[in-house]
Length: 291
Image 1 (tube, rainbow, N blue to C red):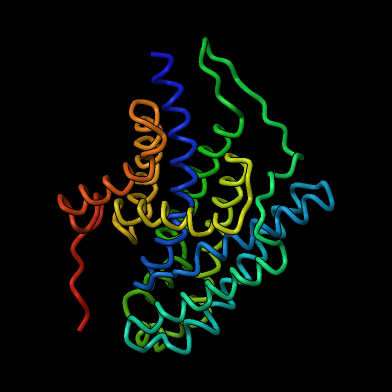
Image 2: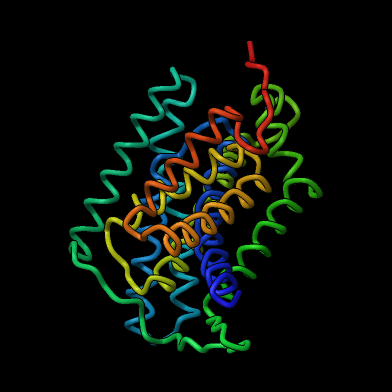
């Protein structure tokens, strides 16, 4: 029983990280029906900036602020220069443009920070809470709580505020939104910024939990986040969050009872099974294609 609860705690922490990264995807797709393939490298850049500032100043709060601001600003720049000019083109064109932006960001990070793996800044002590023979780290608890709060805040903003109403209007019809006085370009930039901010929080927790910051973390987190978004029903914030948690639990128990070497295999197997069973994801719904 204790072993089961320990793996449950591990799975919830890892799943919360995947959920945050996946929610960053779903925020953009749910509003714009576009996949931001530069998402992983944007949060990777923000995590590196967080590391650089925290290491230099020994102030983790300043590091978090700089990382979040840099990611948000970079996402808005990607939207302005890589997406906006091709927004009305065939859906493949924005995807190719996003891949190009992702490669540029990755190469800039390689030039600035090299390709080596860095440890997480030692400014944050990891304390442990012992419950019987179960040991839960403060990291694990903080990751889950923060992820849950962020998901609830995003849901509230989208459902209960005028900003959320504007986002919903833009997602349904951009031309009509402009006629109603909504600044469509500003709303879309803000959506990209919000997705990046949520993603970089997931990226910082990824680095915190696994004690490593490296160039490839953008791709690795992107794959896990994308799996969670697809399984949950991409565009569905709550579904994506729950799917991220499920993915973390499946990986934790799969690694414990089968082998950690098959962790990624288990993740992809889950995607295949879910999509065969429910092609729109666990919480997705069939959406009529716009004429």
